[in-house]
Length: 73
Picture: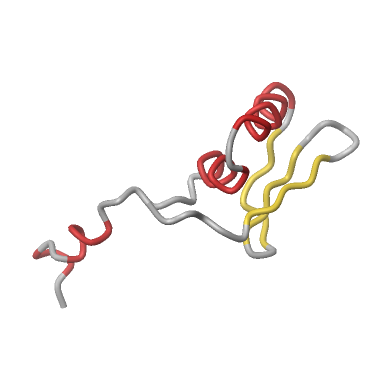
C-alpha cells in the first residue's frame, strides 16, 4: 500500500483536533476520540494514522475495480 501524504493536524485549546489533507479540512475529533487519536499518533506513522481516522486511504482493490465490466468505458 502506498504511504499517504499531505495530512496535518492541529490540536486546539478546547481539546479538539482538526485533521487536514492538502490544506482542506478532512475531519474534526472531539473529546475521547481526540484523546485516542493523539495516543495513536505516538505509536505509529502519523500519516497512516490520520489517513485511517479520516477514511482517506486506499484499500488495495482499485485495480481490480477498474477492470470490472460495470466500470469499463
